[in-house]
Image 1 (cartoon, rainbow, N blue to C red):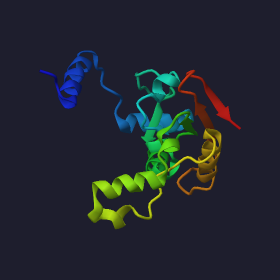
Image 2 (cartoon, rainbow, N blue to C red):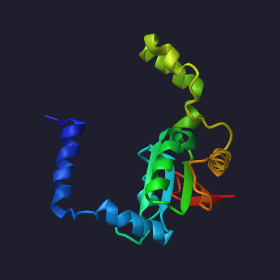
Image 3 (cartoon, one colour):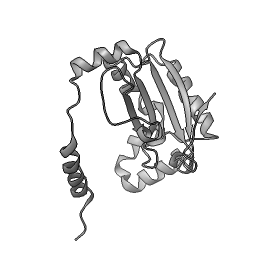
Length: 182
């Protein structure tokens, strides 16, 4: 009998537990991370083909003073969905860098807001007014353009601490290469 996804995840977790080392306590970790200036937020897509930590070479060990990425993932990696979390992370960890990473062949290229709304109407006609005016983060034009758009939004956001370095990245799902978007 095939297991369901939850059963499989819990089984994988039991393997994880065997080698787990407790993370530093937040009250110890946050001040050291703030002082180091090395903290980084990476905003990226929820697409499972885009494992940011692996792509950018971060390891699993979290420790004070080293680069410990805060990864925020959502459909399209759009900053509009990430702003609340960015604000909270600025308050807790004061990361010195924020990287916006979009990727080629993103679903938000192929499923514009109009298509998302159509599907939502089919799923829940009674909730139509809830999503009718929403923007879902469609990507028009190039990936580079969407990255620039999101970096520009962050540069004006009151949720981003002055002096935070902003960088735009484009990940190519075919080659695995990440390039800086100027």
